[in-house]
Amino acid sequence: MTLRTRQALVRIRAVLLAGTVLALVTSYLAVSGVVRTADRISSATSRAILEVAAARDALVSADAAAIASFASGEAKLAGPGQEYENRMAAASQSLARVAEFNQADTGTGTLQTVEGLVASYSGAMGQADAHFRQPGGELVGLADLWYASLLLHGRDNVLDLLGELQKDERAALDTQISGTRMSAGPLILWLLPPIVLLALLVSAQVFLRQRFRRRLNLPLLGATVLGLGVIAGLLLAAALAGRLDTVRSNVDQAVVVREKSIEAANADGHARLATLLYQRCGPPGCGSTVDDFRRKALSASTAAPAQNAITSAARAVTSAGTAATESGGLSVLVPAALILAGALTVAGLYRRIDEYRYRP
Image (cartoon, rainbow, N blue to C red; front, side, top):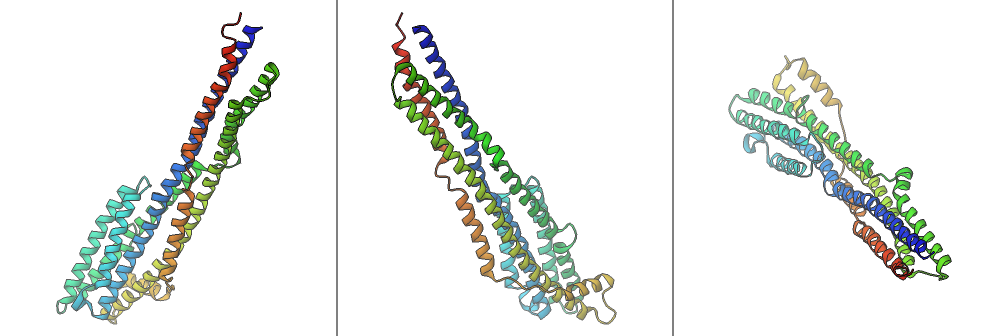
């Protein structure tokens, strides 16, 4: 009888420790995965998407500012103008941040291509400036200006490439969120090991009470409470994973606001360029390509959003990202609770096992 009791206690301890280890591994993977992904999305992925949109906006605005300078004649004195220089500097800074925060597999190669095209665009704009300053060089300068604009807006050029990169960054965001989504099915799988551990702890306490006629085993009771805390931690992690959907929604809204700014600057720049081309080419016109461009440019009109709308949308993304990363140290507390539960399990059974160590 004594031997059987001791063997039963040893088996109970082994089963409880095995359940604790299983719950420790699965819970740590679940919680740390959510916390790491939330940090990654907040500090990198969402910012990469917004910076790509900001770079596109800055480049289009720079192009529109340069065209306005040439159209008004200010280019003969100040070249493309200070607004052009400021917007190009802003585009360069945004592209540098995209390189820092990039999460897309194709990001590095795309950015290298974009940087080369932007350098070519700047060179073409410099040539346009030089030719416009020369007497009788306006038509050549206009051709340079047209070529520079095509480097931005033409097929498979800067804006197209950045648009594809923006889609790739957005796809990376979707992948990261789906990888941490704790919907009903996966959540049950993550909760199952600690629930099983709780059931084992309760069963062990019932066995000890029946065998030794004692009401409570305080260490095992403490381990049970910690198990309940682990389940609560997993539910909090599921809530954090749900907040990532809010981050995605806010990113999409911020991009929509940026797109309106891009469309407005694009429409303004194209309308000015179309008018300038019509004025310089004279009655014969500049050809069917330019004529088609002029018709589309003059028919397009978009109101630009207020700057504070862009700023507010970006701040909403930051706020949502901060909320998603407020884990309260779950990635440390959950495994620590299970390690302590394992120690309490050993302590709770040690005296009972030791009592039977030397009994005949």
